[in-house]
Length: 391
Length: 237
Image 1 (tube, rainbow over the protein chains, first blue to last red):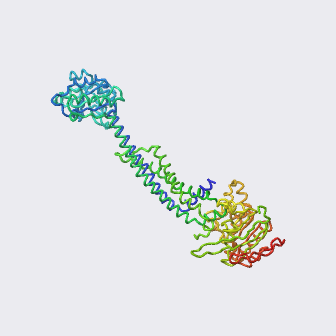
Image 2 (tube, rainbow over the protein chains, first blue to last red):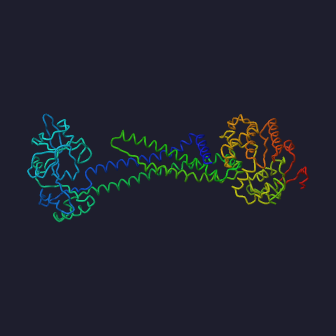
Image 3 (cartoon, rainbow over the protein chains, first blue to last red):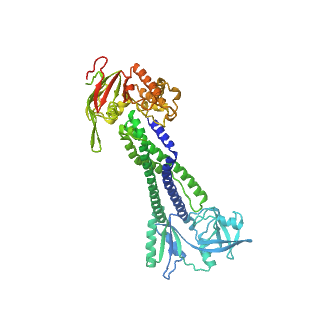
């Protein structure tokens, strides 16, 4: 019986191809907007969270905006790691310089820091070693470079022991980071070198006072505690909260994910409205179809079709239109997402099974909800009146 | 009355319609009996109430007053679905304008009542073929109604009426849309079906068609005005 109803529904859909297609188009566009928009938000979410987790999610970035005439010294910052909740601290400053090896010259970003930076950032070395505290204490001219710098400057990766010139100072290369290990952002082709904090202030001619540093927590889950402890310390040290800023990247991550969740919900909601409009289209065309087929309904009833039989037949037809539209929409969404990922470099989209299942479920609900009234109308026609109907 | 000896027994059936402010008495205390295996024609001019009578006999409509027994069962309290069941199981309809489903082939049209009876595919196919054979249309079973002549369409409709082995074949002006020659063919078919034991009720306004039945029931202004007696003398209204 169900098979017969499906066959009848397919026949009826195929007998009015253009009309069926236009009705489905509403569902196709609705499903496409739902799937594509949510997938784009998904893509954006994962690229943002990737970036954040690359910076590191179990650390704080502390910036001193006003030291009130009492600058932070290296010893003071390093001493903060004695605190209970703190695992390590690393001062951090940044500058750009010209690096030279042989006849090759490149602009590089210089990071001045200490040995603990390695653990805080979760870097990994391909060769050699990272900075040590003695390097910092003695302001040794040693550098750890990333693989892009090695490739661009030396055209090879095994460069430990080589000497390169940074702004005219000779630095011995003690280590090379693994490929795609970049601290900030995900531009792995950026040329970077890590040198002792003290060496950077020396060659840049800047003071040794520290204006920014990283703090990692002893336990990944206690970021809020570290933040509290640091805030308390800095407040006592500086007297107000405007003189420093603390960025908790795990908090940033949480905020980001709540923002993208809201966005997903909002865009999904807007797209769902277009699906609803598609559903109204289905209802409209089903009502037309019921009127057109009044005589057919009369004949079917005369020869013994029960109410339920007619109801199921028209309901299946509405469901078939909505679900077919949905499946076509999902197919076209996959194609669109493929194109987005391969053509638009600034956008990335990822289609999740969740949203596919949600859109199928939603389309089915729409098919039933908007199909039930026309089907009910058809099922409740009186056979003699339906038979008398002129077509 | 559960064990009526009649296939159809109507007792003082009344049916009124409201058309605007006017109340039309389509059936006014109509009574009649038809026995199993009879070939009866119901004749009356247009507006006499014969269509209403056919709708009531065919369980397409229910009477406002009076009793109607079909095959010994009163259908007074039947729900719409019960009536659909009765139409499906007990009545085979043949309409003036054939009333075939245009999107289905001859075979599928004949199959439809069996689908509603939830009969298995294999048995359905056998019975459809037998019914089409009965009306001599097996060769055209895959054709759609549009591809068939009027006479052929009416034969498909008769096959559809026969396929459920109904107690009663109810034909409403079955020759009305056909030329004389084709009409005669269809009437011959009815005679053959009658000879095979089917109960046939034929509704018409055409005296020459009505004359071909065993017995005539005349209706005028919603009243049964003339009933030819049963050969056996059962009826004496």
